[in-house]
Length: 441
Image 1 (cartoon, rainbow, N blue to C red):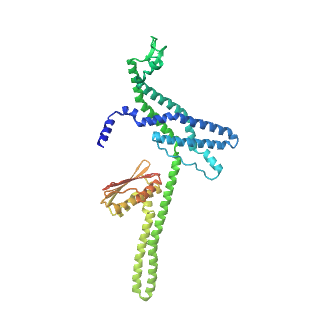
Image 2 (tube, rainbow, N blue to C red; image 1 turned 60 degrees about the horizontal axis):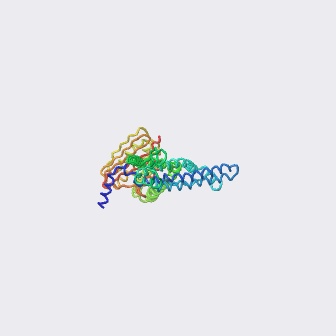
Image 3 (cartoon, one colour; image 1 turned 180 degrees about the vertical axis):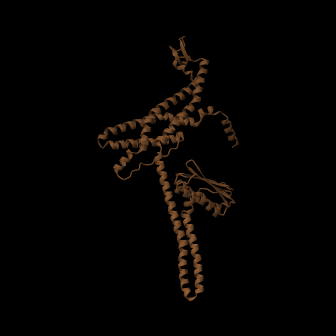
């Protein structure tokens, strides 16, 4: 083990410029660039042939299926190109999703295929890839063959006098250079030195030329063969919509449970107590008055529970006075001393303001229940078009956004409005949780 570490250290002492020609990355990317030409020919011939055939047949209905077939072939070529980029360029591009149609049937499907931007981006890739493939093939093959050929020329120059009856590679002149003809044949020691120098230069430049062209290939594959930004956004919004619906349903179930188990049960008991007090007032006014007094206390408790429930839905202080006073009220109910700093030039939209309020409220509840902290702090401010929240406590730490946890649900709720939740809570503390929301005035 120690020997392997020492060998790796010795290997890394070699400068990058000298290691690069022999690295696996160079050979993988070189293979990719050399394969660009045959793959470009296949894609270009298929695309031009089928699109031309489909366009020519548009005077009949047959042209539309032919065009769809052409685009389907381009999608298949794109699949092969993504696989090639994944294996040689180590570029993992997600597969584009299937084409969506508003209704079922052959004609809606046909229209969806012809109107798909993903399909046409694949066709554009096939058209552009041939000229780019010719360029990359020629440049990479030239640097590779001439570089390594000239570098090793002193080792294989002997084949010229033995098999071709000339002194070496002919640069210019007539004859073979053996009978006093005028010209330049690479055979002297100075010629060998020149060849090796040019060869070394080209070999050292080869990795950087290859990497530059491979980078352009990565951009082509990512930009034209991957899923569109709009499709990704639609998928993300669908996922966020599902999270919002689940959260709303959970909130409704919580409100129903709180009403059923809390205020409703207390009001039912209160009605029964008042009925008994009504009967007692005729028989024993003193006992009946005591029962009425007890019922009056139950009314106060029920009203407090209803106020707490209403505060959990949307507190009146938030609507009337904004985030600063409402967060101060939340901090006052926390079992840990909390300092609140709110620096906002204006109020954000009610939806964002409500999410910010409930985010801080839930985080402070976690501080009270799980942190074991002796102090906490809440900071709220605006940066550009973003509303920033920061909650700190000096507790035991260990908080994480795990699946099924309260923080995971909070993160999903923020994500539904393009917000972000970041948790930094090492074991032993302290815990720092930052949330970022769009301002949206």
